[in-house]
Length: 82
Image (cartoon, rainbow, N blue to C red; front, side, top):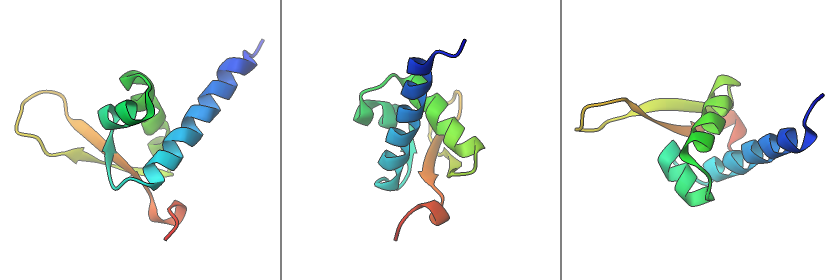
């Protein structure tokens, strides 16, 4: 059986992140999570999903510290209004 409330929460999260990115230049999962009051893991998952379906683009953020790469995302131009 499909949990409709969980599915609805997922769709609402994607829409929330999409509109957030429309107004942002580039944003990391950490920045997105702080600005939208959601967990970092949820923001990371939603951002990766937008990237995987081709709505957002991704690049590595240049940092001076070692460790895992930090990615930042933005909405691709065809989806971003002028």
